[in-house]
Image 1 (tube, one colour):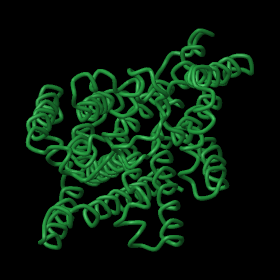
Image 2: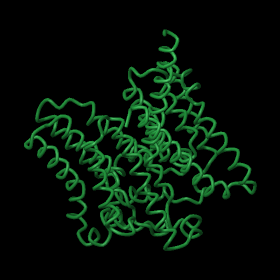
Image 3: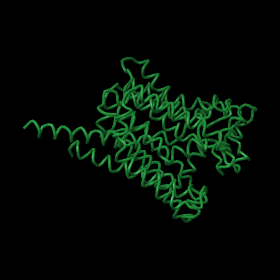
Amino acid sequence: MTQQHNAIIAAMVSTSAILSMNAIFAFKYFPRWSSHHGIFIGVYLGAFLVFQIFGATIGNFFSTRKRMSLIIAAMALFWIVALRFVPVENLMLDRWQIVTGWLDNFFNGQYPYTPIPSAKNHVPGPFPVLFLLAIPFYWLNEIAYFSIAGFVLFSFLLVRIFKGAEGGVASSCVLNLFFALPLQYEVFARSTLFINAVLILSVMVYYDRGAWSSRRHYVAGGLVGGLLLSTRSIAVLPFIISFIRLLRDKRPGLRRLSVLAGTSAAVFVMTLLPLYLLYPGEFLLNNPISTENSLLPVWWIGAFFFFYACVASWFSRSFFAGIAWSGILLFLLVSVVFIITVVHFGFTSAFYRSTFDVSYFVLSLPFLIITQQQSMSLLWVQKNERRTRGFVS
């Protein structure tokens, strides 16, 4: 299959997934906020589709680093101001209470994974590192700033990823992400799924662009990988893709590979070990491993996607291929769990009564947007080259 055909397929798949994700969020949440939700859904999805097609032209205008920095600052300022007029208590969502409840217990000397009464007695799911990273924003009394910081980090990662690329690919990614309904939900719901996805992307960039010339670099890579795994268990799919690509491309040898894998495993265990030593009984009753595993209806779904991530990563010939597979596999995994939940509990219960949490689709959003814009940029460059050759001949 030629590079052009791969780009066309990647663009079609990623665009379809992004539009599907926005439609899911629109149909779920617009009815809560307006009695005329049908009109809003139609207008929003139509406008978003048009922006998906012509957004690259606008992105080119913000392609300079100065203009991109200004637009990122303006977006962050918009959220900071808007959050003052959207009290989280009015949103009928409890994601922020999971974060604040975990940290309340942590600072009060209680077991952090105790069920949170204010969040319908839900047990916090993520692993400890994600909550610990949220501490500065907890002290600021606004968890939404965590997501905003993730958006800023994502924007600067894009500058590094697309350094030297033609056109405003990075700025197109930023604009498409900002106008995506799932991201707006993330910020105003004070959720941590988007920042988790950005942390995953950060590690993938580090694994692809980092120096791997000595053993200490593999120790550092293992440290970063272990901390990433201690955010959410779903991070293992992009992690394994980066790990296998590193094995194939850098050919580190068994010893250095063992250092990386061993350090990652040790760091992950060390983030959980204090919880077990301090609260052995509570840990066995409620712990993030069992809570995260309970999100999968059957165990073999996770095993299947893990296996497919291994296969896909081995045949991924570029960093962007790894990004594409990460986004697609994350989206498909959440979609499969959603479909199984609908089959077991019915659509109304799964979708409208939140038996299934559609916000998990957000984990795939940054990867899909990068895939979409990279593919469209590649097709645009190839089209211009054909025009140039035709003009010259």
